[in-house]
Length: 326
Ligand SMILES: [Fe+2]
Ligand SMILES: [Fe+2]
Picture 1 (cartoon, protein in one colour):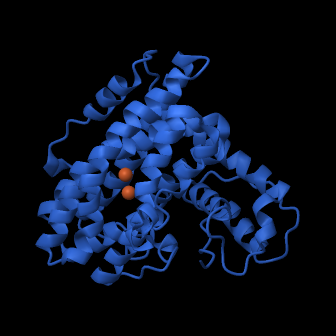
Picture 2 (picture 1 turned 135 degrees about the horizontal axis):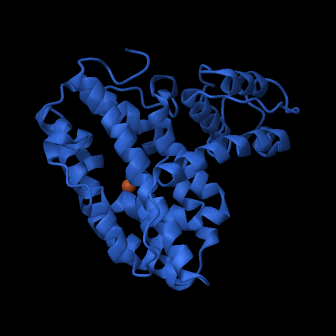
């Protein structure tokens, strides 16, 4: 993956530094959300596939981690500001269902409804480009949770991830299904090809899971994020698949979406009941654990809604939702 174009002082310093051998990087401040989210994304990718021609020793460079910690502090504080405090509960599956069910928008007011019925082919391809930032590494950030859980919650997370990773068949890995879909609709499916094209609001949908996944103290938020993700997947994916069929997509193209209609109807139960329920019931402080699970779930809903609304607003205003085509 080629290093992206900088968007401000932090990403500029970081990208320039990464082109050279590991050294001490200064702490640079930024007030710009595009700069912040891109810089975080650049730091996090060192833990996934890495960047072309960047020394792998950068991954654990203490000065880079110190810089990242400052960015994460701001990102997390912003998320905690945006998410209202939940009433203390211990019945987590029910609370998750209530949280997810609180979105009562009619389909036509959502990006999935628009993509199903009205989007042009170009708009659908933009949606694919936005989603590729996460889906080409689908499941990877949640996998960080496995060694941090025990018992029922750990078994549940592994059960979900086995499906996400194709049950031993590489061509059935969800990230691979996404890649095949990109190929069949004619969008560049190279990992990281579209980072420059997507705005901060899209990068944040990936960054939030990396943030939760890479910090043990945020494991409750990580499992809550996954539960909300699975619980809000089946219906939109049916709409995406229908939208792509309407635009002439064949079975290879729609397979990623069709697969999620089926799989996530099962995953949402495992995630809410066994993963999140199991995690909270084994915690020393169940109310605090439940609050973190619900915080993570609410973050998932908030960042995904912001990214979807960004696309929908751009399309309604008659322009592209991508940075490079505006
Ligand atoms: Fe999946
Ligand atoms: Fe799933």
